Image (cartoon, rainbow, N blue to C red; front, side):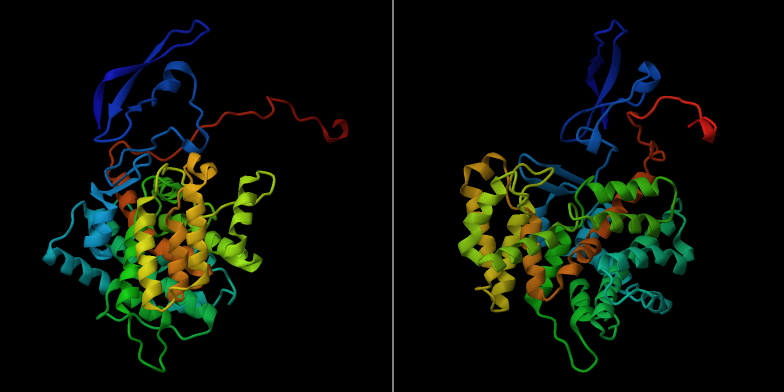
Length: 436
């Protein structure tokens, strides 16, 4: 960032002296007012619940222009990456800042591939969970437990430790997600296969059984790889901010990523695609497409309590660029599996049509987001609804690690310590119990 020629002047109506604050410019996007010395100069804090107008860090990884509907990883548009690159290339880009050449890609892929197995003792840890435990409850525990098995890479201030833990996490997340699924399904775990791609290996661990050969469908393999690319990072969202805040204390990378997994579990964040599919299934039970109009009218009625899931976004005030790509992938997968007449997909199209034409939704810029289609794709692939958020966590892990490493390398980083506007009781004295 560079210091702007502009200065921000904060003046007070009570006659207190004005305060001049520096303004910094990024390479793109809004300028920021530096308020770090505000408390020292005025004795006041700023108040910004939800951090709607607060830049918590400087970052060179991901940029979102919500008004344009633009998402860039290290400057590259998501549309180009999702079309021309696979997930391994995207991981290399996010972690190291550049797209790999053929040799770099082969080396990086080999490193990831040879870390996909997990310590056998993890199986015994997994068996401690109930069979019907939510996959995200299992994932939160398993990811955090990795730090108990890989003591040689837990020093967050050691660059070599951070690098190997990054490779380990990216490599082992598909294994952990597949194990959580197999455990709940009562099926034997399938070990990773080094001759398969990242997405192909995940599909094999998820759906293969020892009793017969499993052949990866290339259309589904590409679709899953695209899901991973589209979800790899998304700037300073809730889970990424959680990873940064957790990591700012100096905790190990596995613990910081486990914190991100826990945050992602929330239905307003990573659980949105699960909530979206549940909504579509509820409409289907009501009567399907014939009830779409009635459902949308209920959405407009603020007193009905009915919410439209999969539309709108905290940042995007235009069509989510990931949603367009996910819609294409959705059609390809349904066609490949002979599910073009899938009732939920038809229902989704009917909902989208109304939302894009109805003035109520258009004026509020409630466009479909990536969750709207990704749930349908995962359902078609055979991934259970309860596992959707775990797949999201698998994809987002690389973004979390890149953000964590960037924060640690920032000379200005300090342990996170938000302030508050206190509204409780003023000082009071404790009376003896007989006088209370």
